[in-house]
Image (cartoon, rainbow over all chains, first blue to last red; front, top):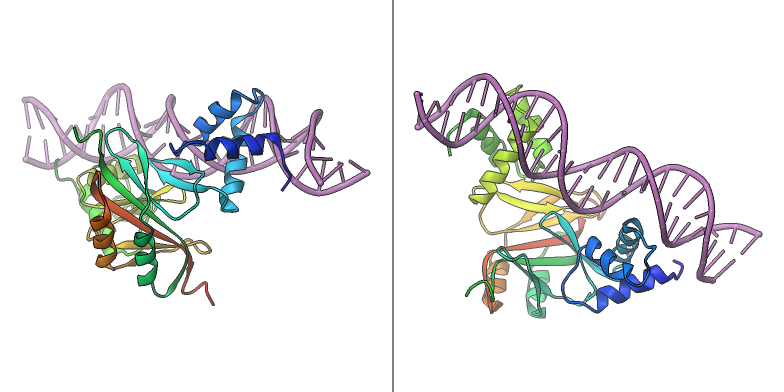
Length: 121
Length: 121
DNA sequence: TTATCTGCAAAAACTTTGCCTCATA
DNA sequence: TATGAGGCAAAGTTTTTGCAGATAA
């Protein structure tokens, strides 16, 4: 895997936000600094990085969302506004992994769907 | 919501399998009994049933997979063969829901990715 | 130098939608 | 018989792919 400016900026972009952007959003952001970049390049790099577990890929509402934070955590998705927020409860993952048998998990994905703090008002 | 043969057969199909089929697979199955049925009808009904929480809709590998079992459980997805199996550990969901704050969850989705029992050999 | 990566454009895959007809209630 | 549902075809969205030229090592 060769170092390129595109790759570096994509990773930089993902690590600097907590919004779990889609490839499209990463593209728009990175394009500000590298105008000639294409969506295909963004997809290719994000896929590669996800495969190497350098970023997290979530499937939410029929789109891939990416997360630069690869520490174990969970996600909350608001059914009203669509916002994706993090929940850091390591013990949830630990508990879940403890219970599993007959299957060798390499990852656990835990997603809560519901109404976020703001939309509850 | 009006009763139709299509709807009934789709639900029947989902409830009789443990394979978490996609709309396409449900379509192929139901088509054996209702040859004139279309994929669009299957999608429309599955979406409706998912919204009414009569079936479960999972997003796995960029496809919707449907589950006729709406009791609380978890899913294991094999990274080799793609098989989706159920894991019934109610306590995992309970534990997860217990830990959550500032968010009103209506559902929890817990997916383990890894290598299934068969592919481990 | 050479193998990998990017940009561009086109294709692919999955899902939804519009419109008209049919059938349930 | 009135309205919701299905069939058909087309469109929409998101993601992937092939190829030729560019670039990192």
